[in-house]
Length: 484
Image (cartoon, rainbow, N blue to C red; front, side, top):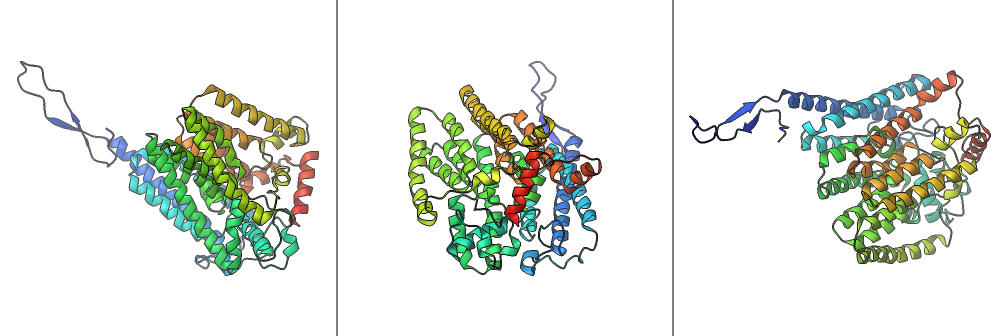
């Protein structure tokens, strides 16, 4: 048994055969210095990961910087947070801050790799304590990299305060609302799921700073709930919960872009993982209900359905899961219809936009299609559907299948942003497939490298530019019209 406390390990020796001069029933101590070294390295890596996160949060809180988009337009004290003032306002040029952030994010990526290697030698309390500290630090941070948290509030206020359906109207129609300066998608109907949108309506009745902090606290608590579900799934599957939680929670994309940006994907994954836990506990109707909630928060969760059905036998269990899904869908549909009529989230417009380093855009540039051309996006969608059919037909490990399908979905997206990795991380951490975990780590590296500001600057200096083809230029024009 591996010793993880740093003390020597005692190994039992077999008794001597009859006729021996003396029984060998004693226990001897064998030094395990490599365990002590791995534990020490793991502790140092965790400390560095926390220090890097604290540094980013302090700089982001100090004043307007590129770390907090639109902070140069509006950066009130309630957005800056309670850590504002601990550092003097940053006077360095934006390019310098962007370069510094890029180096620190890549360094945290390397440290994350060290943590994963050493986590088994680190005590459970240390891992849990580190996760709690990181969540507390990020709770006090302004939203990092993206301002979607204000878009959530903007659509909620559009509906609850201004009486305009967020699925048929845009925030520009309520441009005098104080949240407007902090939002991005001024001419885009809401792409967010009806259950999430309905749940944010009560926040519109609160003062904007209070609503902002309620949503931040809810997101951090949702993240802790997600990790608790990962822990429970790991125990049910016979996996080491420490490694699963570390794989998810200490990933720099999870910290900086997902939790640090307070994105609603956390709530979708909460409900999706709850359906996995319930299936493992043979509570199939409840699992179907949880999945219905996840789909109503974000439609992406529907990808889990065929793999949940694959996980359970006999057929009557599948019927129970589908009945639970259908029964839960009824009140959700009634709620959506009562608030929003028959309008649906505007997924089509956003999915037609391109990010510079999405795989379809890079592939389209490489083959001379001008970026992520529509035919290429349709081909990618068809490939995902075919892969799901093939994975289900193989009837192998259903969690691994769900993970591979999710990875394929990420690779097919025209609008690929780092925090979407959250859809994949828990599945990769829990599945039996080491290759899936390696692929998730490779995707992490790709997303960090492609989304840190330094990459675009360096490539531009060397004449490498994406989004310059016909499809890319059209996407940029469309994005500008949605944000103006």
